[in-house]
Image (cartoon, rainbow, N blue to C red; front, side):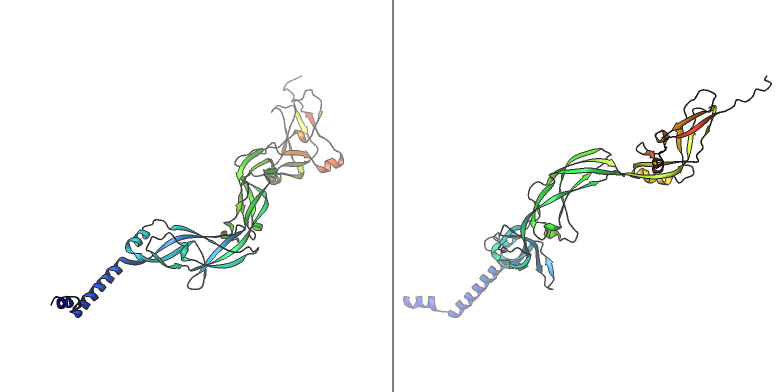
Length: 361
């Protein structure tokens, strides 16, 4: 009797027990699925060459339309796992940084190479979270060999006052070394740029060196370029005004007498004088225009004289006065006067007769 009851307890009523088991499994599966979630997150991926003498100068991937797109190091990770772990992953404020070393070979030429992004590289995922897909799935790399090359330092002076130029500029060191892709280095210039803000005779300044390149060079190619030594130089230079000169054949002369009651009349036989003007480029440029005016003249100071007889006075280019220009503008002897061996000019001071007194003897 007892055995019969036990048999009925364990093996009887299979239909009801089967229905109960089905619902139990269904409830467990729904509950389990409700705790599982699929989502996506991002990571920052830096791909580097394992070989020290090789460098990656460009990274592209192909979008769904087959267009090459520059890889900005951002990858999308499609993940699945427990809701709590997925929420924890989504709470990250900044993408996780991942570095992927790859073997690129040791060839000495620019070449493309395709790398499939392995799921194993993204080890930061929480336990229980599985990585189902990485986007983009593969990256095309442009690889080049690393070289070291010596470059002369080119000096550029900014804001130099008009008419001035640098005389014998020097840089110490005068050459520096750069390390970078072999295909990029020949297109680079090393520049020391100095700003000259005030008029000065000499400048001596330590400046940070800059790299200049044609605009056609892809900026991605320039990222691996770096200084293999000093990145600063000491620049020294002297400054002087750029000089120019021109000859004028007939310049009017105005004689400046000592006083309004000067008892002499000035007699100068020549209609004009021939001189050479030399000085800073900017002033000479302006002077060329001035001499074309009928009002332009050079002054000469007439000395105070004594006596009643006519007197002869000489003057040279050194005694001529030029108004409106700096002392840096010189008045020199005209080439034609040099060829003729002519020296000073002369003028005469002719006494002015005193007017007769009315009613005099």
